Length: 261
Image 1 (cartoon, rainbow, N blue to C red):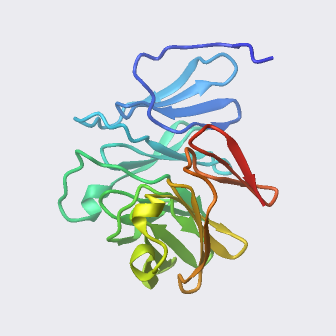
Image 2: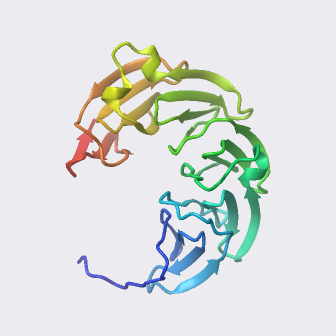
């Protein structure tokens, strides 16, 4: 019906994506406070104070859910990753990312969305890109590459991309470079001033699929990073794409939903 079932004001703006499981809504606000809220009535079921950041960032806190183990992982603007079991309400572990890198300021900290896969966590931040054991928070490796764009994690590879078009393939287990590619430096026709920033990277039909803010689709060979094909399909994208039933859905900068085979 589209009618409001409930509305609650929690006072401080939320700055995270939303995750849900078993009637629970999971959120983090701009002061890095973690909430569990009831789905049916909006009541507060749990809150967790974490270390605040002195500067208020417009970047979203990122949450990832492991509904099998009832764990939620989130990263704050103070560069801390938490693992919380929302069933027994315990903190499993806490890891401060600044301790894994050389001393750097976290005043302007940002991160990509967290990827959870087979007892591993992958996240790229303004400090570095990290692989961690999701069971205990142990660091598997960190690689000196920063990005706000969510990485692609396959069985043997991790693919990273920067907004300026630098693409890297890493060995998932070791964190070592398999290949790297500068899209706009190595191509005679594909230029940054035409494509704009890279906005997303996905893995589709055994190809790396990249979108840009000026409406380009770019397809790469995942084995070596060579450009297979590219096309300008819109004057610009507002959203990141999603893949559903072998089609690509994306919103352009005119707020139209576009569908591609």
